[in-house]
Amino acid sequence: MPPLKMSDSPNTKGLTVRHISHSYGGEAKRPVLDAISFHVADGAIACLLGPSGCGKSTLLRMIAGLAMPQQGQVMIDGRKVTDAGQKHFIAPEDRHVGMMFQDYALFPHLNVYDNIAFGIDERMDKTWMHQAIRRLGLHAHVGAFPHTLSGGQQQRVALLRALARSPRVLLLDEPFSGLDADNRIRVREETIELLRERSMAVLMVTHDPEEAMFMADSILVMKQGQIIQSGSPTETWLGPANAFVTELFGPVNRFCAKVCEGVVDTPLGRFAAPPSINEGTEVDLLVRPDGIGIAESTQEDFAGVHGTVVAARLLGRVSHIKVDIGNDQLLHVRIAGVILPKIGTKVAVLVERCSAFIFPCQDKQACVSDRAETYQEGAASSKAMPFSLRKERNSPL
Ligand code: ADP
Ligand code: MG
Image (cartoon, rainbow, N blue to C red; front, side):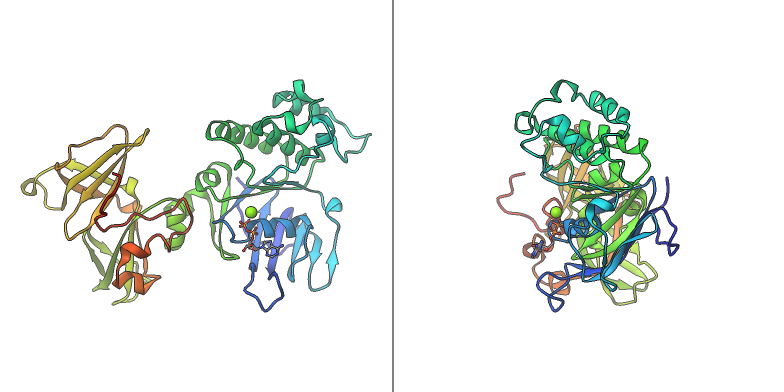
């Protein structure tokens, strides 16, 4: 897989974005995009992953040439298509960029075929286009108008329209968000197959971490107009840069502690502090619920952390178990399969070290005061509500 890295060579193939900054309502306002730089190599798929409102669509619009940034440059295959400093701007239709919008933006007055073939030179070889129409099951609908199509079919038409002119850069804005869960998995697989066959740089926007993991060679994590981490899906999952990135991938258990003699002592045991964190620093220990194991056990037969099961629910593929580990603290555990211990079962708790992360406490107030109330406000996205460690009254579980 071609890696995603910054390159200074003007001849570099693919998409290069350099120091893009922009504020709506003038430069005095807080920037929507703040010094964004990255490179997507030809043939690579990169995903911009971030919560709603962090500036993902704005960035795509600047790359497509639908808007001009206040600062920065965009290069496609080494050719400058936007340079804010020099007021240099190539029109969107001359950039060799394909763009698929979140709402598909199909032309309502054109049928499927004309939507896909829109703007294609009559003399161009359309073999690929005809084959792709058949492959995606659209051949029976070429004369149909967009409003008569299902969401999945509209998505396919929009994708083929974006691909039909053989773009050098393909931009996809939340391409699967309008589809139901069943359709999404199928369409996602079809899409990635189609993209892999073409030579171009792909930049896809999503707020769904699983989608980014599935599609991308590289993930660019965005927060408030900045790219705060980039790397392969595995690197990003195993080495999140901070609590925000960790929580973007799903809810976590959170414990507050202090570094003391290089060690972080928590209700879940003692953890070595990362060398970069100074002695005495207040830190958060974040533990993914699927990185915790439980086994029926009494205090006598196991020296580690113990707890009592207070709730167990089957969620389908996984079971969600709540364990009271004392001192008014609850631990949320997720285990694959049907694991439903009885309420009151005494268990030993085992933490997988690669699912536990220590970061300097970002919100000191939340760390020392009433955390349970501050969790949700600090959540990185609607999907990433951290679990409260306090005992919850009237909990549905
Ligand atoms: P995302 O795609 O990550 O959800 P957007 O790029 O759409 O985020 O928006 C980023 C921020 O910029 C949001 O706060 C949004 O309200 C604001 N914004 C987007 N477009 C405009 C615009 N044309 N004028 C003013 N503010 C805008
Ligand atoms: Mg958007």
